[in-house]
Image (cartoon, rainbow, N blue to C red; front, side, top):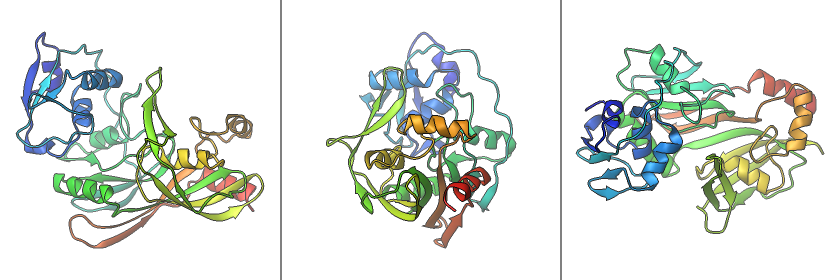
Length: 311
């Protein structure tokens, strides 16, 4: 396949044919990976405006490419080449020839974009130059810690995507929320995604949003905070954070949907992280069918705060 960044610098639109290596990949991720130096906001702008076309038709950012698709790439302005990713290996929880599961720290983005030159996936690729294929199977917010699945084969990636869409992956999070949780055990509230004037992604509970369900179990609670075990029954963007804020119990340290005054008080105590941890994954291995149950222990900073606040 031609180098898209070179194609993007030409004054005329370029048509590119999708090969097997990019089959089943979302068009936005396809463009973001190859259009190095193009701001993420601009990539989405040309997608929304219809300047990017697949087989002569307009597509949404979540369109999944098929082998043989022809993608129209309009001329775009490319900024200075970003710095190369620093090689980094994250703690490995599980690995075999087709699947890698790592323990991502809070504060590490899963991929570059939104002002970041690179993230966990780019650092892993740099640390493993011999790996032919490394792709994120799902995402975690930058400030969420815990289990992150990475496919080492295209067939594994496609199957993991299917399993995630159909709810065949059990995802359990450990959360510290504000106040004594008194909400429902299952939060069902539709979620609507939007973009702020500054170009940041946000999510809100809205009747015309996508159906979303979150199961909540209280492990410990005081009047100040609650330790929760949260299971995602659907996989919407920022789902746990928005659902718990909607229930009146925002996640501690949440700088988008949280209690900002409380966050400032926590920061004075030296607590500056989001208290959301992807603690467990349960699923059938996409290659072998073997049932896997993978767990990540609480990070030391989160565990220490919980021990102090919820003895």
